[in-house]
Amino acid sequence: MSVISVLPELLRNKIAAGEVVERPASVVKELLENSIDALAVNIQVEVEKAGRRLIRISDNGTGMSKDDALLAFERYATSKIKSENDLFNIRTMGFRGEALSSIASVAKVRLSTALAGETGTCLEIEGGEVRDLRDCPMTGTSIEIRDIFYNTPARRKFLKTDSTENYHIINAVTQEAISHFQISFTMRTDGSETLLLSPAKSLRERLAQIFGKEFVDDLIESEKQGGDISAKVFAGNPLNFRNNKTNQYVFINRRPVRDAAVSYAVYKAYENMMPKDKHPVFFVFIDMDPAKVDFNVHPAKREVRFSDKSSIVSFVRIAVVEALRKSGNKQYEESPEATAYRKPYTAFSTGGASPLDYTQIFRPDAWSVAEPQAIPYSDLPSEIEPIYLGDTFIALRCAEGLMLLDYHAAHERINYERLLKQVGLIPHRLLFPRQTGLEAGAYKVIVENLALLNRLGIEIEDFGKGSVIVRSLPGFLSEADIDSLISDAADSLLNKDSLQDDGLSIESVSSAGKAVAARLACHSSIRGKRESPDKTRVAELLKDLSETEYPDSCPHGRPTRIIITLQELKKMFKKI
Image (cartoon, rainbow, N blue to C red):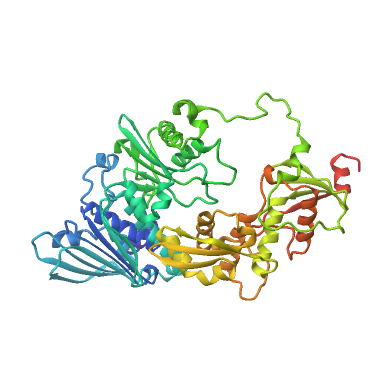
């Protein structure tokens, strides 16, 4: 008896749905692409309960006949490719014909559609089976997805919180809206308006609609042509880097993608001016011959493969360099081609050692901390003499032997526990309250957590239309970049589950509170050679660190200090 059998079609569709329908945002993306391909100029998105209960997308596109409406839910049914050659010349957003079939296998679907001037068709499908088919009055297309994963509860339980799922949905709509600026997009989430974007005349205008004029005014625009490829770049000002990779977008032929090669090209353009652990803001729009890029390498079409990756990297890097030249940075006064290929300068390029100037490393003004400087502690040994090792590391003698201290991580731990315990925090009220604009997903998660942010010392109010007002901050954050700080707070709220358990048990402090506190602590902590502490500041750090509950690691789980005992040193030098 054979042990191999062919799976039933419904089960095959459910397996395929695992590739296409990762979460409600995946459904939104696929349906938006269908609306765009149908030449819609007005698209409306409605979401309830983070897409679990309802996703409805309506458009004024070309619509479908009754026969096509039925056929559209068959697996691999598509109007967008006819032959194998079409797979390597993709000019539409969707093309493989598996999306509607996969969605219908794990949800309850209602489709209403009509060709111009014809009677409409209403179709209801549940779990992949047609339940109802009838004529109805209709213009364009409207598709409702209800109770996603209702018949695959194991998949449903892996969805994240409503806040996180809503963010991904809003981000999916935002990405399509950016690259299709001529289309009007409206989005409502649980009955409230989230996005209202009228048709724009240009990419810059659409970016201003989404991110705000102040944000866009800080972007440097450039455009580069080269044979069958062109690139339009909006690069962040070199004076305004971020602590995370938010607001980094890459589009290939108007399709939002994640591509490490293109991102690498952008970072290479910034490499000689960007501090370590900082990230640029960028929007890269590439138009190229579709025969030279393969969109069929990822089930959700998020990744691509180039026929000549190295030339794309070089092209994008030069396009970004041309934008940065407009910023007035002297480094880019020479030709962009020369700058793009120039090797970064290093003091050790000849192989010789570069002596350290300790008088400069430990001069009194070599460090700066936003919080008020405390009185030196007389109970600490006066002979502490730190040796700066590079990055944020110093070495010093201690009772046990040799201590290697990461002063940034140590300061993070101190500020983190101060925030959570509300100890030693001095409020800093802004003389002029700061209005900051956010993209729709970040704005929604910030507004949902205003009370939490206020408890952490950030007095913040909803200003409406994607903006918030910041009125005060904890004292040690008074010098922070507020736009970057609020953006980081939103990012930490969305990724709160990734924070390691630090063991702290503080009443009323949630995982979200800890995640935000960890990110804020990083914002305010000393870093780099220019802020390397002198012996007085090291003494303060060590005392404050000793008073924390978990002094040996920062909130992210990295060590704050490593002690090498005399015994261990003797073993290293083979003396015992």
